[in-house]
Amino acid sequence: MAARPRLCDRYRRFLPITDATPRLTLGEGFTPLVAAPRLGARIGVANLHLKLEGMNPTGSFKDRGMVVAVSKAIEAGATSIICASTGNTSASAAAYGAAAGIEVAVVLPKGAIALGKLLQALIAGAKVVAVDGNFDDALRVVRSMTAASGSRATLVNSVNPHRIAGQKTAAYEICDDLGRAPDVLAIPVGNAGNITAYWAGFTDYAMAGIVETRPRMHGFQAAGAAPIVEGHPIDDPHTIATAIKIGNPATWAGAVAARDESRGSIDAVTDDEILTAYRNIAEFEGVFCEPSSAASVAGVAKAAASGAIGRDELVVAILTGNGLKDPDTAERTVAGRIVESDASEAGVLKALDW
Ligand SMILES: *Cc1c(COP(=O)(O)O)cnc(C)c1O
Image 1: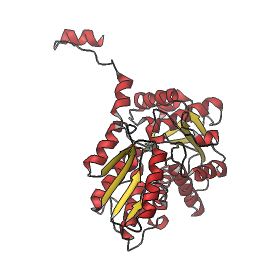
Image 2: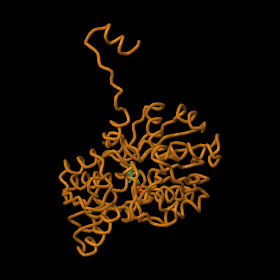
Image 3: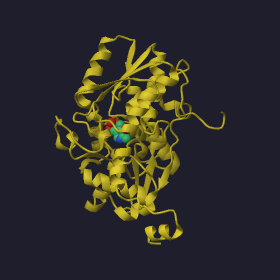
Image 4: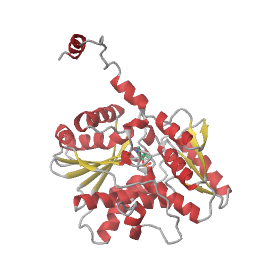
């Protein structure tokens, strides 16, 4: 096991890890940063890279923060973890909780979780409660439950600062891979923990003198769930991108600070723009991400068209989660594409129009 470093060891100097912190890992982090020349040409940026966060152990970036949050919870003596989730936090909490041997409780908005994410939480043995409400309602419930539970249970939503600390590591990796900071970091924004974490990570590297610059942070919300863009909470958020279907982001102020300090922007993209990007990422680069993740690329396309992102800037778009998590959206997207044939060469040739 000596050859492959652990994320928490590699970046320990920037993390709240001490000798007393349990050494938990599922092999998180070190995700690929891949050049995307065909997609870039399509959407008007010449130097586009995709950070494939769907290659984390449970298929989303949540694992980077969860490994730190669960380790610190155990260090502090907790025997349970609890979260509200649009799906990926619960999948990650369930996995790390199982590996650590502690109780996991997750509270979800009923009917609003992509199938793969729900199954991940259940198969790992988490207790799952589906509430008649949205994510913001679920978060309100678990926050007050945690406050009432004393030290027994730790809340592992991104309001837990250890989540944010762990998620900063993605920014370090990008700089390590590029040998510099990008000009632009494009990222989906839901509860706004991740954009806050990336900005903190780039700032750590700049303060440490490892990079000379920091990127402009361009965050993207779904148009039906864009409270930061509109400047007020949204009571009934709606979007196909369920991982960012959040009406009142817990880390709102962090997102605004990242935007303003970096001279970036937070903008909205429509579900149509998201689904176009979702297909393009797969068809032009062979990468299958979940719809929420495609908001980053949809946003780059929109900003490139308006001139907010320059054609020759070095752009990194974060693909936050794996496409296999949401088979329903994928199925609807490709419906009717299978051509049937009898099992003869002639039949297949005809079916393919070869
Ligand atoms: C959690 C999540 C987001 C949103 O991240 P925030 O930190 O809540 O802004 C985006 N995409 C995916 C796939 C996620 O799981």
